[in-house]
Amino acid sequence: AQSVTQPDIHITVSEGASLELRCNYSYGATPYLFWYVQSPGQGLQLLLKYFSGDTLVQGIKGFEAEFKRSQSSFNLRKPSVHWSDAAEYFCAVGTGGGNKLTFGTGTQLKVEL
Amino acid sequence: KAGVTQTPRYLIKTRGQQVTLSCSPISGHRSVSWYQQTPGQGLQFLFEYFSETQRNKGNFPGRFSGRQFSNSRSEMNVSTLELGDSALYLCASSLFRVGDTEAFFGQGTRLTVV
Image (cartoon, rainbow over all chains, first blue to last red; front, side, top):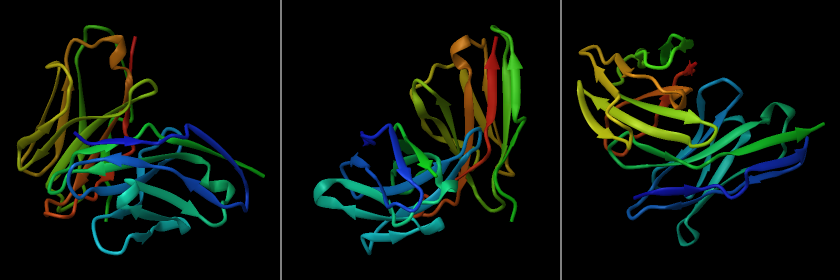
């Protein structure tokens, strides 16, 4: 069975600083990997996805993530954080051909002005 | 293109009652899945439907059920509500295409059981 670990429950960064959110997954086959963002009381918005090909994927809002098979990781990065990026971020792994996502426990991002 | 629509947005129910939540997927999407989100358990998969058939089911009791209609709209039902069923219930839709499991989520239904 697949699983996702997000080791950081809370992260605080200053506006303008760089950001890296960690995600490690466990899945027997080639994983489909996703990062979602959730603002309070809202649904999940897809930031980016990895299915195959280039291991560095670009997403919306200036986010990118790098798939590293050897480390079973899919870390999310942003070079310069904006105050509006404060939210909860979820990493997820999907099973190919289906629609079942297994989520990590999330990382709450706080941005200091 | 309209997104995933969930109704109602908020619900308050009493223990022992039952509740039905509705989800309208993005036009053209044939797969709908449901997730429960709670502070303690996080995001947990409930079930997934495609072409009116349940394809996957998570580890939830039989009180949780769902269905999908021919227009891909889906409903989930929870019977004999318990306090622990209080949660944000999220619906997601996606195309059914091998290699494409990008899921789009609705705003959710906030269920409070008192």
